[in-house]
Image (cartoon, rainbow, N blue to C red; front, side, top):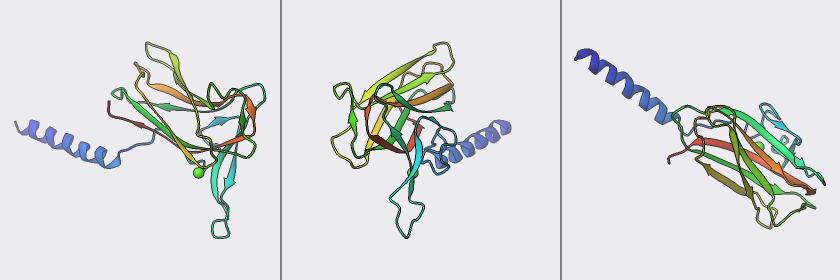
Length: 176
Ligand SMILES: [Ca+2]
């Protein structure tokens, strides 16, 4: 009985620590403060909103659209086996001269690639942006993890002209 009580105490303690640490971002360097570390991309990190007080500005990813090909941003990450739902969110902004080549399809393709587990594969979503140049939030609650423990999130721009800016990527385990 005494051993049982001790074990309960340890479990409760662990629960408190986990609750305090949530929510957890499964991505690294989501704000591009360390340039392209952990990311693979056709884009580059630029400094936005540079002021005298903040000479480093806000580092963000700039992707220049290609006239014929998709351009990509991706990062690999790991998922605990008990996680069933993920929530992706990030911010995106249109640059001057931005013109998607296929506006009826959308501006971005978001893809969760499952790297292992019994079911390999990918699930994608076309995302359409609003028609203005402010930062806008994009989110996707993703529940088709199956048994995947290694994943890659990929964001692609569709063929077109101009640039898009990206920042503040977060992927968190979410409630069902
Ligand atoms: Ca940033």
